[in-house]
Image (cartoon, rainbow, N blue to C red; front, side, top):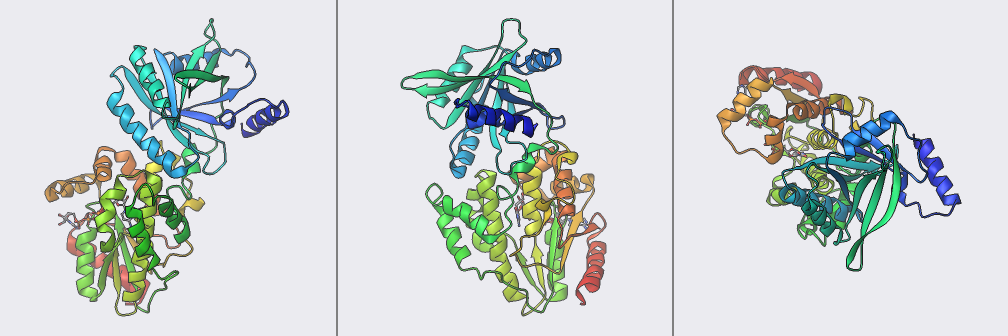
Length: 432
Ligand SMILES: Nc1ncnc2c1ncn2[C@@H]1O[C@H](COP(=O)(O)OP(=O)(O)O)[C@@H](O)[C@H]1O
Ligand SMILES: Nc1ccn([C@@H]2O[C@H](COP(=O)(O)OP(=O)(O)O)[C@@H](O)[C@H]2O)c(=O)n1
């Protein structure tokens, strides 16, 4: 597929026609996270009519009227924030007759080429929907497309609209062809340095780019500046406890602290708590960079404390990466990057613990504990409960992270049993 698309854009370049960068992208419209998306590409030439293709496109584009919207700025921070704003606007303003789907556009196999947008099917073909979407284009941050068919309904075209003076005008029109399913789910193109950061500098750079639009970034950066780079562990062991919410991390880490007479730390560290809600409200690009920096700040504390006593850490890099990967990857467990993917590698400059224990509990037991605790859940945790599939993806991502990999413990038995099992593990791994 990518070869065919490259040929197309090379040909367009030779012909010196205005074949925008969008033309070499593949679009993926996601009907349901459990099914494969519909993949389509744009073509400068009239494609041959194909019965199967026409049927598929009719399903996609002729449920009333179809539209797509993408944020188009080159600034990654602005694009991520515009996408979030757009989602809020569409969710609140679209009439009930509309079906809102995720539409992504990407260059096959090119990392960070993915641009997120929306695909809207308006079953009633409301004039109001079209006007509302054209209004959005006025802000010049978005790219609006409509979809039209030839008279016999066999060929489809994507029309691009843009604000020219006072008018919203059609500025380009391309034929649409079915594109092959890529080898890997396109969301994988958007993990490295977009939601998971593998060095202090990469995460730091994102918050630096946010200084203007999120003033709190400056304070987080100041704390990060105080971090000793590449901090190394002291002579005492460092034990990280990981797991989904309500798997017993707090209970276990407190017991371990008492028994081992150690220091209890967490990531993100307490010094960042005042800004956590602020960054939780930001899109993944920014939110994940905040948590990534949190790990580096915690690493400094871990280095200092491990010179004096054993250190127990409640969540660390495994949490940051596993939640980010599971949220970003659409589809089922099979859509996760394969076990040997580089997305599961440990950042080269982050202090490595001696032991990472992953607590797992059966879903019914976890739900029982959450209910008994009665604490308000974070938005993401609420989603976990509603979405068992997402929970499985987070846990599987935890299990795939390497160097150090986590040791998985069934934390469904009693607190005492879990504690003694973990103490045995610590003895084995950390010579305690
Ligand atoms: N092994 C266990 N068996 C039964 N209940 C437990 C066990 N470990 C923790 N709990 C209870 O489950 C709830 C969640 O535990 P907590 O330690 O707060 O989890 P986390 O820190 O992972 O969110 C608490 O009410 C706690 O008392
Ligand atoms: N080191 C960490 C810790 C939390 N997180 C994020 O924070 C959320 C969980 O935090 P939480 O405060 O609800 O967790 P608990 O420690 O209360 O179980 C996850 O959704 C992760 O996205 C992270 O990315 N990195």
